[in-house]
Each structure stands twice: as structure tokens, then as C-alpha cells.
View 1 (cartoon, rainbow, N blue to C red):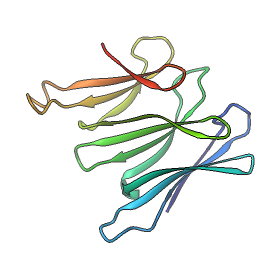
View 2 (tube, rainbow, N blue to C red; view 1 turned 135 degrees about the vertical axis):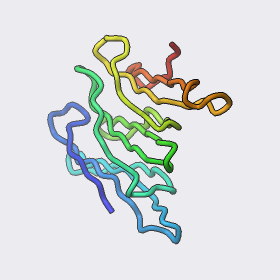
View 3 (spheres, rainbow, N blue to C red; view 1 turned 90 degrees about the horizontal axis):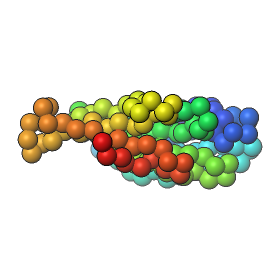
Length: 153
């Protein structure tokens, strides 16, 4: 199985072909997954691991600000109560993971919380030691030029 997108990821005005490739399902329905970027007829790939379900995994492109190159996003549901997200940048000759996070609410969004023109990634979390709804909280990640770093508010 294959999901594909096309976007200029490295700013060279030539769109890259981005694909999320799944192996055949194993006996319980899991697949191995790889991310592939084709740029200027060269292929670059990143093995994402096992335990992927194609029906619950999504490939997307994330744009967070004016002068920031787009990112590749792989979102995957982990049942009814969680969602994981991996975010990758492409530097022209390599795929780099810049964030691996999850939400157990599940809810992962992009919002410009500080009005600086750049969206932060917001992951809602439940506090299961207290009231999981009333005492929920957010993990917030901001792009620092190299990766998404968790910030405290």
C-alpha cells in the first residue's frame, strides 16, 4: 500500500515526491512502514518501524510559517485513545526526524499561540491520575530552526 504527496520541501523550486510505503500485513494486521522522498531522480528513505495500520495512518505536509520550509507529517492512530505524530524535514539529500510525539486525548493541532506568525504543535494530554477531562493539559512544541522543542507555558 502506498500514500503519496508532492511538494517542494527543500526550497529548490522542484517538487519532491513523498510516499509512505507499507509492507504486506502480518498475521494480526500490522505493517512495516517506510517514508520515501524522491528528489531530482534520487530516492531517500527512512524506515519508520513496525506496528503501523494503513487504515489509521496518514501522510501529510505541514506548513507552519512564511519563511519556513514545509515538513512531512506521519500521523497514526493508536486505538480510540491516542494519536502519534512524527515530523520530518528534507534537506535536499536526507530525511531528518524533527519531532516524535503523541496525544492521549487524542488531539494534535497546529496553532500560532504567541502570534509570531509561526504555528506551534499542540498535543492534548489527559491526566489519568486525576480527572482525565478536567485536569487535561497540553504539550506545546515550537520550531527553533533545527527541531521542534517542547516549551512550557
